[in-house]
Image (tube, rainbow, N blue to C red; front, side, top):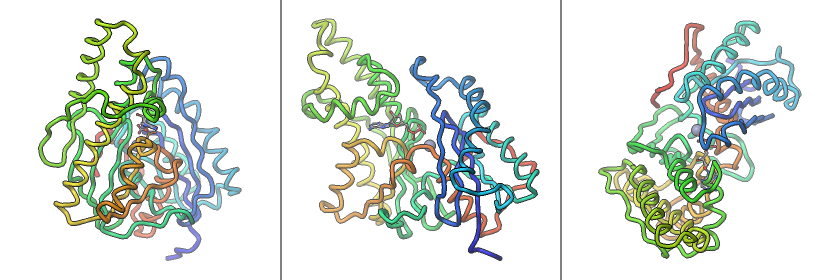
Length: 340
Ligand code: KG4
Ligand code: ZN
């Protein structure tokens, strides 16, 4: 098998980003993302609008990824695409497009699990970020997911903890909404938290067994707290925004740290690889970086463009599947509830 000159075109359309990347082996040549702004006015992702926006964006996004990579489609070795988990209508746009392209070019089709993609994003060649060594614990934190995964090889992954309700990104975004901040509010909570006192307003942490997470009670606690305080003082949010944000962020960071500590004890694995949009959070980054000194852990955080939803991560997963000759046939379809 020729393994030196593999060109993969990858498509990611599982949620509200239409993304396409072109890779040469483990090197990303182009990584294009069209983020759908339409959802901002609704305070969250509207599935039907997401599917329609994918349909509008997919051709220009793929075209621009090929142009930026300076590659003709005839040079491609395979087409990789996200088959799930995600929003059904959104996934179907990517699946149909990938199938048609693979068929037209008569090259293999590779289906990729989105969550595996987040974890294998760490294997994209990047001079600033060394790749993790197996085994490691993958922590995937975003608007759609919160998982701790034991990764022993490229495709040997076991979910050892996950949220039983909301994702951590939703906890950030819904708390922000309660404070009257626009969607997505996570980055704004981060911004104001930098100026506030994290111990100003103690929020109770959820008690969830094992390595699982729960954030819906936290979101409600923030809502009730704000309702009570604004009843007494209508200017409560305005007068305390920094402290409220710092306290929310502090609690969420502590929840993640407690579960990670437990996972490290349980597995004996001290290498942590983080993915998902919430890994951009400065409190989470500071906490993770501090564990290297405090506990002797090794923490990997990839470049920002490879932590949020992107097609580079789908491409690198496609590359390793290509090396295993693990191809899909044309009967493959989207699976919105796909598991790792
Ligand atoms: O990975 P991503 O782009 O998309 C998915 O949800 O899959 O993650 C988006 C999530 C949103 O909930 C957003 O509020 C959150 O990541 N986020 C942040 C920060 N930047 C993005 N949350 C907290 N602090 C940030 N700096
Ligand atoms: Zn994701």
